Length: 331
Ligand SMILES: [Fe+2]
Ligand SMILES: [Fe+2]
Image (cartoon, rainbow, N blue to C red; front, side):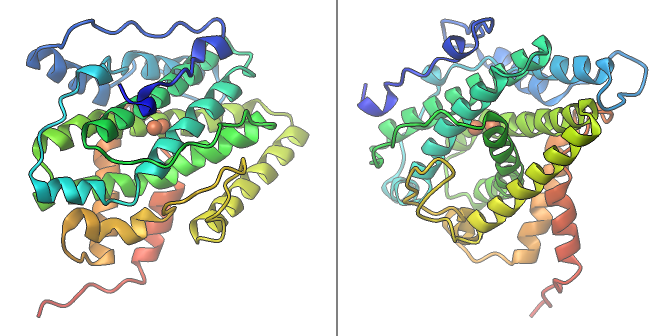
């Protein structure tokens, strides 16, 4: 195994009462995989009452959703299809692998660091499981990178955050932005026919997991907010505003050389804007891409209980921006 896949991150060490999920030892059959896929996308609570943000029901059902939709796939049994030379070249040259691996590396640590500070047991376990899943994403990526001989830049050491809440908010809102666009780009890649379906299948659980992560995050934000006193609330809202300002600044490219923990970023922070052509093989109209992102976003969330809150900022911003984008006239 290459050095890239040797990784010693351990959520259980950071959160002593967390037990990592047990995964099957052997490759599951098709029926088991399909059942897990359905289970991870659909979840409706049997509780009849509304989920008032901050209430015990809201907390319990949010955490239950996260636990019960867990997908037990094991990265080591994923099949990496043999690629034709042009498909291999296309994948190796995508400018995302360093940043993808490092983003997962930071996300797992920040989530675990914040989870360790959460007193409420169920929420702590849910956030710990989220951190564990980020670590699994990193493993999926590391295995793919090794299978296709993609060379990665060495990873700077991951720094334990000084302000765990800030770091968790940065990671959570980043995931809300990135996943929204990733859902659309993933569909573009799927339709392009440029990537083998087996490769798309291997990444599908990761995509849906990001949807669950931001669903958990949106509900954590609402639950957390509702529990704060007025002065804590003011402090929190200022922090959230600062996080959005930081992410905007990062995404327009001003923070290209340094991230929040002073790790160097060598690749593109803005793959969404620049990468459509790389995954589609053609130029795609921005308006069409935004519509596809919205559609995919709605589709991925559609199977979860409507009483759970959804991340709203990106869909709202994009719907607003679409008002100013004219439809391309047919030639
Ligand atoms: Fe992830
Ligand atoms: Fe995630």
